[in-house]
Image (cartoon, rainbow, N blue to C red; front, side, top):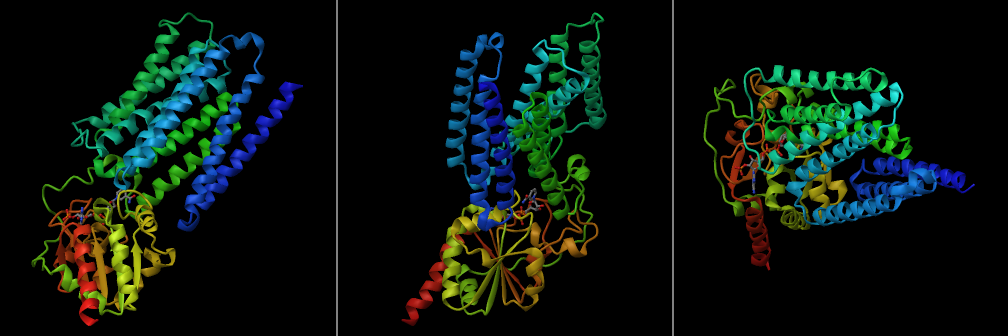
Length: 483
Ligand code: NAP
């Protein structure tokens, strides 16, 4: 009786948790509801974790010999993992978010691989489907874990240049083949009565070892700048692995959570690739982000013209309309608060101000929306690329802050450019463009930006935060002088 009540309770909680995951995800699709969406999905996750403790009432007394130890281990693991994540999550800088996502994602993959390993080492004899699903989830989880750790190391600067050698793809292909063959051998050996030429536990260790090596080898040649897309791919892998292991454990909440993460990761990967006008294969197998040795793209003539922060600020103060284009440099300088302080001064002077957001501005999807929301910018001032691009031609000033590739006109005009075809924000069409950046530093793609040399563009050199402080002082100074 107790068992059946417990099972109904587990089933009902899993259903509620699944609903909360999906409802939370739906709310994450708008900046206005995203924060509450994360909380809703988090409540679902807590419910799914807590209800798993009820499984202790469903196991047979014979299997309960290690119950106390296992429960204690689970509680310690939850405390250490949850406590550590809480502390790191509170302190992490916005620019370090991609590497944090990478390492957490790796842990998810590792957890799925761990479940597979426990099942394989348990000595139980599963059916064919069960065994194949366990091995597949284990393989994908292990690849995702080691690949994500390499992605973290690259983003954190622990690993430097991409590691490439001749014939690398063939070597990687062979390593993958070995992992598949070992998996096939395990299926055959574990289901047949024939004496194995290798002890099965050794075969399992080799299988996971080779899968881990494949994840490392697959990620090492990819440039650090492409890591956000790679993390998104591994995110999809982890989701898939968790979903497969959820099937193995007969846990619907795990299956649904895994599939939701897998599908979201896949969609995000495709959207990021599309916004960069590149295929996923090109991201995984090309040397994008490595500065070209021989420049094939059109030569850019002219010089960058410098202006003072105060002059640019005063011009914007007397403009009718200003569109601001934030990029990676805004996040690096942590200048979002100062930017909004400056914008409030312009709004007080009746200037029409809007923010134009490129889908891949910054280093992770939605980074600019999050930064601006954090500074308190109202959502109706934040406009996405397709909805604002036509307005640049009738705008007095486009203010580019720490953005580069997302406003590079070469994407429209230069067929030889690595970013040709990527949709860009039409900042160059505004009557006047100001660009805040520290110097002649290139953007993520490593190419020169023709916009900086065009006659309607002036550069304001300096760290974005320092420049914005000067701009605020200049506009305030005007008010004080008028008083
Ligand atoms: P970007 O092209 O990388 O350019 C950023 C610019 O910011 C640099 O040119 C740099 O010039 C400047 N900068 C850096 N620190 C600064 C500071 N403290 N103050 C002022 N300026 C600073 O950035 P983006 O225009 O945002 O484009 C994003 C790029 O990342 C795209 O190519 C996109 O494809 C790629 N990407 C994005 C994602 C994503 O999900 N968002 C994922 C993967 C790749 P200085 O050094 O001269 O200051």
